[in-house]
Image (cartoon, rainbow, N blue to C red; front, side):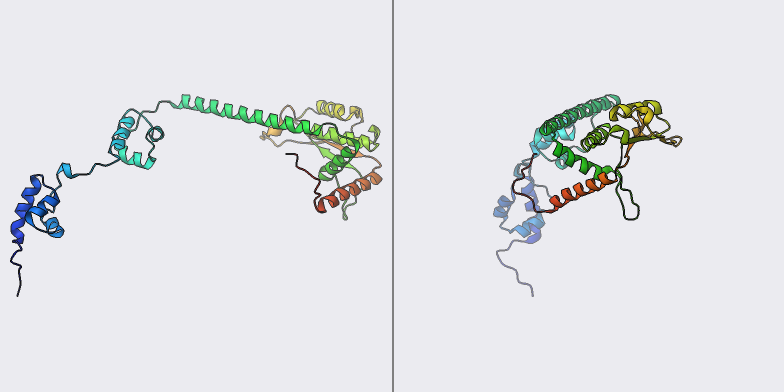
Length: 292
């Protein structure tokens, strides 16, 4: 047996009334007060009926959305719109994705020119920074005394020179490098050790694409060893079709300097290096201070 409250209005009869009141512009609260029903009942009666415009709360981003669409229609990019409105790109995309994309302001050629100019400016800035730092570091060195040259030369030789092995005895000074400045330092070091020019046996290791005569004279000027006293060069044939970047006009191969009768001197260099390495292995001194 179904019990119905006496004060409960007829459920089906209320729907036409609720719809009529809604279409008349009343809010949900006004309709509930008028009909005396609850939220769930009213929601059932008003299903499918849109609320009147005056009951809609304004969206805080409506103005931004409208402004974004205007800017997009003016040809602005997402980044430009974001910079002006301070909203995310995802929001901008949702607001203007139905609008046509703006015509690019730059064709491919001008765009590449602008990019190349920007890259050239960046390279120039980096080159200037590199030059400045190198110049400042060079000025920190100043003059080098004999002890400092002795240490520099010993470390340089142990890094780049030929070394004696238990399975291959090579107790002599043999140094090879392609950097003219490194060769200059090495020759100055040999002078400090009392090595005369006639003991320096120079030979070139070079590719056949280079000018052998010009390269020999170049290294002769660097070392002070007469070009006619150079030993037979080691010439390597270039592989056809190769275009290596280190084969430019400044390429003059590698210079090998063998010091005759240098077994005793080699053993001294090995000892100097052991002294340097032993110092590095010891605990750091509190007196050291950084230069950078």
